[in-house]
Image 1 (cartoon, one colour):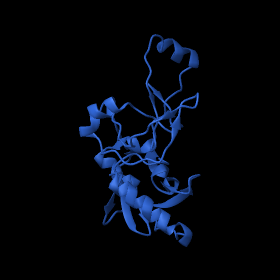
Image 2: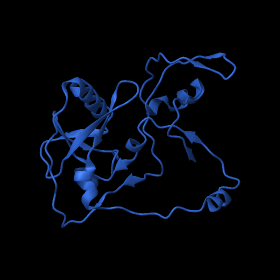
Image 3: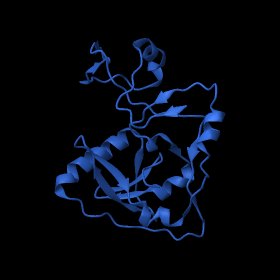
Length: 196
């Protein structure tokens, strides 16, 4: 499988959508205009957001049970970003990527990162909390020649991700280490966030 995180758009035929439509959200209107390489228009009937699952894999954050919890208060938010942050939090809530929590011993402040399209990406500043005490698995990178040899005669699928990290579900006992502290309260990630 080839993962193309930089893809601007991926599409499927209407027939393929009809096969999966009962298991995904309904089509939404789209203002996207696509053209073939030679300039012919491609009719877009709508867009959908989907959560990708592969072999039931879940992410686990390894933290020693003896680790002292780290809680940081929310950082002040510039008024110019307040509405954008609230909109992004609402979107993440609606998509089930985060959920509110009432109390926690763990909390990371957020870093709002402006994107080119005028929206923002919300990142937890985990370098001051979880990343200080988490045991990260380290994998040696294989030689490129070994990779090519092992991939001979393989089939490939190209997949593009809008929320690449947030596609991987977190194990239940790892979610407390991803809590973010915002001006709207505490939120816990259900899926792997940026920055860990």
